Length: 335
Image (tube, rainbow, N blue to C red; front, side, top):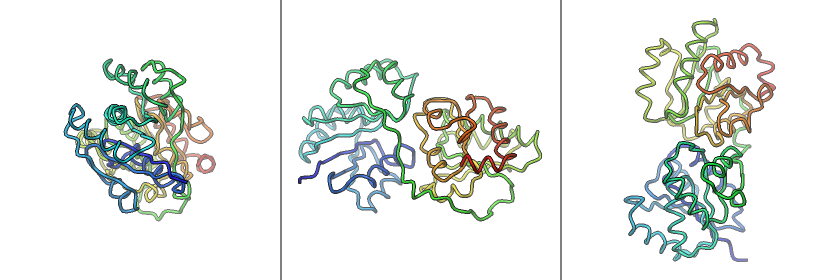
């Protein structure tokens, strides 16, 4: 039986949630039925190298601009030449460029994967998504919250949408005892890119609140990079918590650092589709704290497997962390 040829198209494959999701798909796909390739529109990245080293068919297309008509024509020709049966695009740039090229290539089945809910998208972006949905077999939404955005904000027909939650390799996150590498009693992990919508500044204020109002020793470890790093370093100094915060940088394999955390937190203020880092923490049996944003309430049941707090509320965030610190038995049950 001839295999079904599937192309996953993404802008790049640096370290991030979307990129790790594509890796999980590539590793988990039924190789007896599907022949999968991953193409990067603009550049590679750490996940690109990981996939290539593990034998995944992959390439970089060096797109000069998303509006370059000659690139669109070349991409359409390449898709047609390779004879793909399914085109699966990820995130706005690839969803736009990929679907336009896919339409001109004549490919019959196109999936567009939406990983976040940008409620403040410019109207022209919404219009483009709405128009391209008519040529899309299904718009895959990573949570009900994202589906709600796609249907209500982008005005895409509900019949065009399907909710498929992010997946991961559970075996990779089997709980392990970590060696004591810090002198601090409690270690709070935050695995997120350093961008405004991830809410790090509110998390910093929560750490200051704990430091000022409780006797416990706490250390916040940030796994991720981004444009806010310098600002966050200054903020830590301003708040007097510079000794309580560690910037770990990019972490290619989060399963290696999760055992060192007592709790994993995500303080996002918007745009959160379905946090892969929280799912990975839960797979590693770590208690989690998240904000009531996007798809996070779909995976955290407040008081059962973690705690939910309002976004932009550092005091509530701090108190949720303290509950976990002061109730180790219940925290173990949450994990």
